[in-house]
Length: 588
Image (cartoon, rainbow, N blue to C red; front, side, top):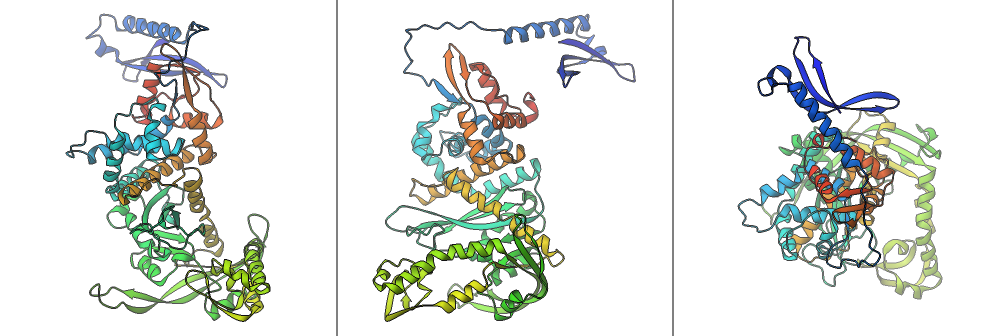
C-alpha cells in the first residue's frame, strides 16, 4: 500500500491510502482509507505526508502478516471435545444479509417495544427463517439446532412459541414492511400481478375453525388450509393470506389484493394492477371489483362451462392464425372484442338480509387458442378416469371403491353423492360415449378474457403463460421449503408459521434475482447449507465447500465465502457485516 496525493483544480491536495492490484492484465488501484485534505491535516500533524506514509507501510506489513502461513500442531492422541459444537454453518450469512436489507431486524424490534418481552422476537424469527431454508424442521428441531450457526441465539423453546403468538398479529404490517423495502431496494415491475391458490393438508382427526375439509389440490381427504399468493412480474412474492379449507378459490382474491390497494399501494410499488389468474377466480364479483378500483384482469375462462355461443366461436376455424408455440408444437389463436354481462353480488343491509344481485355489462377482449401439446395432455390426464369408468361398467362391484366424481361422470346409471360415493346404482350401467366425445372435441382449446383490450393476442397469451412462476413457487413451498408437515395446532402458531415461510420464500427469490435467476431455490439452499466450517485448532476454523453458486451469491452480496481458513474473529466480522448496509461490506 502507498499514500496517494491527488491535486484538485483549485490546488488543494487530497490524501488517501491505496492498494495496487492487477485485473485482466491492467494495473489498477483501490482506495483502502480516505485520509483527508493536506492543508487541514497540517493543523494536527507536523508532517502529514510522512505520518500517513508510515501508516500505509504499517497496513502493508499487517496485511502480509495476516496472510502469512500459520503452523498448526496436531496431536495424534487428542480426543474430540464433546462439550463444544465443532461444526457450524456460515452460509446463513447470505440469508442474514437479505433479512437485514429488508429491515426485518428493526421491524420486529420496534414491534416488541414496551411489551415486556425478556427475549428477542427478531432473534427467534431469524433462527426460524434460517432453519426453514437450510434444513426445514419443526420449531423444536430449529431450536435444538441453534448451536449449528456462527450466531448466538439466546432464548428458550418456550420463548419460541410465545414469539409465534406475537408474530401472528403482525402479518399485515409485515407485508407492508417487506413490500416497501422490495420496491425501494430491488424495484417492482408495474402492472402485472400473478395470483393463484393452493392448500396444505394437516394429518389430524377432527377439523377445526381454520383446518377444514375442502377440495384438496393433492386429492387428499384430510382437513386443509387454503393459501392465496400474489406475485409480481419479476417472480417476487408480494402478499398472501390464509383461508379456511372449505373456502372457494374465487372468494380469496379481493382479500389478498387488499395488501397492495389504498394507502399500501404506494408502499408496494404497484400503480394500476392487472391481475393474471386461472379460471378459478374468474367470477363476476372479482371482475367488477377490479374494474371498480381502476385495475384490470387477464383471466382464463372455462371452455367446457362456457355459453353455447362462446363454444361455437372457439370451435369455428374462422379467424385462427396458425403457428408454433415456444416448444415447437402446433398452435393457433384468434381474438375478438366482446360484451360480457356480469351478475354482481350487492352488499346486504344486514348479515341476516338475503343477498341481492345486479347485472352490468363490460367490454373485454377474448382470446381463443388451441395447442397440440395441451390437447395431448388433456387426453393423457383423462385416460385413467376413462379406464376406471369402463372397469365400473364391466364390473359394477368396483363402484364400492369409488372415491371421487372423475370416473363416475362417464358412467350412465350412477348417482354420486357429495362425498364421491355411489348413492344410487341402476341395474344396468353404460359408458357415456357421447360425453367423452363432447369433451374430446374441446381438448387443447383455451380462452383468456381480459380488460386490456389494447393488448395483442400474443401479448395476452404470453402474460397468461407467466403463471408458471407462481405454480413453481407453490412447488418450492411444498418441496424445498417444506411448509408442511406443520407440527402446530394453535391457530396463531399456524399463522405465524406461514409468515415465517413467506419471509423465507421472499429471501430465496431475492437471492435468485441477485444471481440472475441462474440457480434454483434447491441449489441455493443446498450450497448455503454446505457452507460450514469445522473447528481446527485454537480459534481457527476450516471450510470445505465451494462451488459456482456460492461464489455468485457471495459476489452479489459482498460476502467472501472462498476462504478455506478463518479465525473466530474474522467469522464474527463477516456475520456482523451482514447486519450493515451492503456498501459497508468488503466488495469481492
